[in-house]
Image (tube, rainbow, N blue to C red; front, side, top):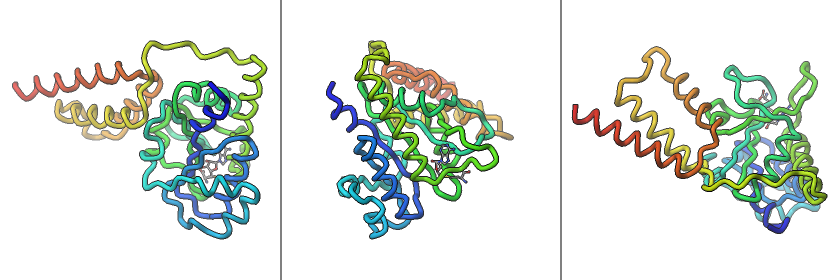
Length: 249
Ligand code: SAH
């Protein structure tokens, strides 16, 4: 697959960005690193002259930017979703470093769309947003002052994708193992999790004192396994059968 095609499968997704300057800065950062796809989920102020100004020679990235209404829309069709996090979260999730993140993104973009999510300037990504991710990535910054400027964080992680692509050209990265089925995409996983939650409720499987934790842990379990399309459809068949049995009891 040509390099150009692979880049078109890598989405850099900015969620609810407040400052248009950061949008321009992110556009410049990704173009500098040879990437092209910028998604904005409900930006506070966009289009904006300050974004254009900060983008400098990367205005074409802004021209092609996809502004969407929801995160689900931005990650639909993605077989790999990675969320950035400036700090430790309560429930640990599979955590990778920026180098591994660059390698995974570049490696997997050969086969499916991938998305890297960036959070709000003031409070990052919500737990619900982070729970949609297969992996979290943290830039190992100073623990006493760990939060980078949004566009700067985009720069660091886009650079790692660039490095992985250059290594790949030199034949250093092993090519990904071929799997017999395509991986399930974010929208298919979302439907699966809704189906699972619904069926668990129907079977009275919820711990009424702590229902949220169960759903979070189920998401983490299934995100860790990287299910393919056939596995998702098998499990959905099982859920449907379980629901039907309950109805006939
Ligand atoms: N106070 C917020 C910081 C948000 S910084 C919080 O605690 O979450 C804005 C965004 O920049 C983050 O959502 C993330 O996308 C990115 N970012 C900043 N510092 C980062 C770091 N050290 N590692 C990974 N992403 C980081």
